[in-house]
Image (tube, rainbow, N blue to C red; front, side, top):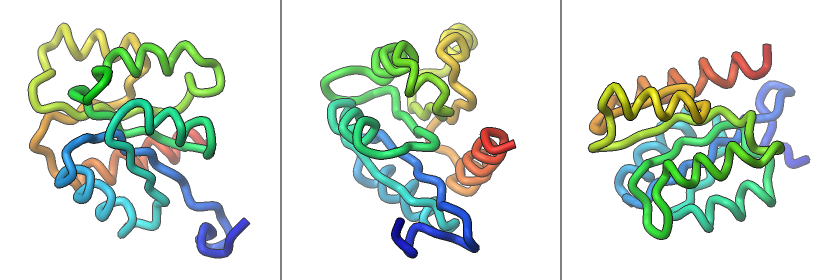
Length: 136
């Protein structure tokens, strides 16, 4: 275990950001890194799957509009794999947000939904809250 991955004797939590917009990805990453989270970013579901298979991921931030496969299909597949099904997921989207859509996301175990544009500080606060709940 690398010393760089420890904070006050505890392992840093690792967040996987699945977002194809480079600007959004950079804002999320810098906001999380400034709060001492380890962050890996994927532009598409295929790259995200590689991270999930190779690393312990504590939380996922998932955009719904992605190349190759939409985020909802990725989420549905993810929740069908037992070793990934309990990873908390926060969904972000610029166009997906009707009451029906949010109920559908809840059915896939989505913990929080952020409509773009959103305040990165609120997102980071939600990440912290969700990760604290998974430790308790």
